[in-house]
Amino acid sequence: MTRLDERSTAGKPLPVREHARLLVIGAGPAGLSAALEVARRGVEVVLVDEHPVDHALMGLDVPYHFGQRMGGSTRNKARMIETIAAADGRIAEAFEAGVDVRLGIAVWGLFSQRPGLRWLRGHVAGLSDGESCWFLSFDAAIVATGRRDVGLAFPGWELPGVMGVTAASALLQRYDAFDGRALAILGSGVEATRFAQAALAAGRKIVALIEAGEVLRDPAGCADLVQRGVPVLTGTMISHAVGGPDGVEHVLVRTLGNDSADTGKLACDTVVLATGAAPVIELLDVAGAEITFASHRGGYVPLLNADGRTSIPGLFAAGDCAGLFAGKTSDATIAAMEGVRAAAAACDELAGSTAKAWLPTPEAEPGPADEDVEAVRSAWVAASMAVADADTHLCQCEEVNLADLLGVRPPRYLSGKDGELKSHDLAALAADGQISQDQIKRLTRAGMGPCQGRRCREQVGAVLARASGTPLARMPLPSHRAPVRPLPLSAFAEDHEPDVLTQNWEGWFGIASQWEPFWTLSSDAAGTEERP
Image 1: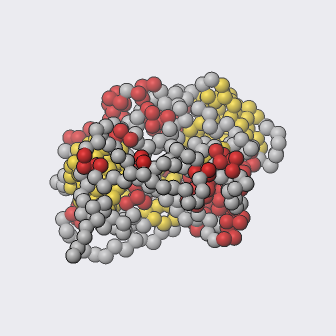
Image 2: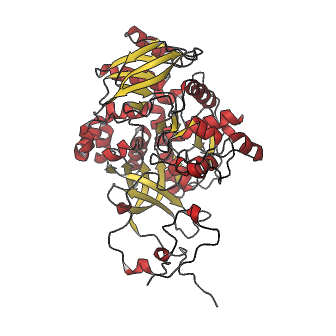
Image 3: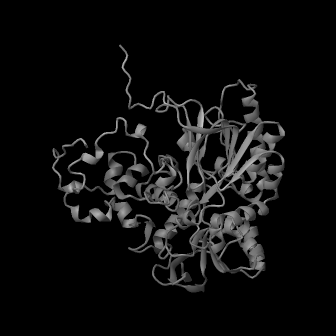
């Protein structure tokens, strides 16, 4: 006789609200090009983009490191939708082409049938407008989620006014709501020089471009800035950001190799971090797509075939989330062409005309301007460690400093239990086996805060690799989990609890010891009581 487990999710479909033939996530160069190509081929397409981001999420540095330099106009979502649409004429073009364009809608999860989700039928995306959540099923999707900045710690980097260059570019060029006036830019790559040129054109002052290395990463762009009167400093690191009531007021800089003496002071209200970027692969990872480390394409990227398809049938990637390199940063048409190619392949797959086996393409030979992400991150982390003090938090959310990380110290709120908690330093853990950033996160809480590791994920990984002598490519990918955006609980469930939700509900609220601190409980203390 067959018995069914009423608590099992197997065979219980999700409450899907709507269906899309093809879903495109991200309205940047790749996403817009993909959506327009799909529409041109006569296929129904929904294009979603999380911008404009809610002001409160910006305050949490989600999805970019905004550093509190967003203007008050970002509180007006309707106005921001108009501003963003006006900033890129192709959004209107997509509307006219029949694309279902939805701005201000975040995708917080992508789910496909795989081990652990065998009961799921087809592909499903979790969407949210910040006030409610719903599921959308789709036949194929193109992920074009772009890039985000890699954080870099130094004393004072937690102050308002320290931000990432991707956030600064978005506020300046898409939102028209950038409050920075006098800017110090850390980094000398293409991201730094292109933003500096745009900021100068918008009337901002660049007090200096600061590079920790002796060699400039974008010599031509830096030469152009020098001609415009921008000081370019090499072999130099910000040693301290000093602030007041409104955030950063000036920074102190130090010539690397000079261990104690600061060598300059720069008056500024904003520090823009342009020390590196990472592909936004979180949705692809959550969906179960195969991920690999590509040193000349920004780090962890999805494995793709020549058409941009991932290891999951029906799921494609294009643009910066598919891999970063200098040429793509300089020329948006490269990302756009990737979007068109993925759109063509997705439409062909929907039409049933592709039966060939999926084979990932080998990593292309790096171009002369393409950087080794491991070398770049290691160099910046070395510069960070050279100026960091005991109060410099690599993880701002959980206040984890360098000594906490390397000592693998438990969370501060358990400091009174040090004698009872078994502690291992990094060397001891490395002797036991492969260092895992997920393991370190659980032991120290580094990366476990509300920003979901966006400010610290890559620099924590680089520090662990450097300290343990492990090549960055061999560090396991820190896992991503849905929801990949912080969302209020009210967005996930109605205030009213239907009777069906109480069926098979265990007596969690009848646990006699639920309000007792766990360290006061003996190992056998735990009886439960059924609620009345």
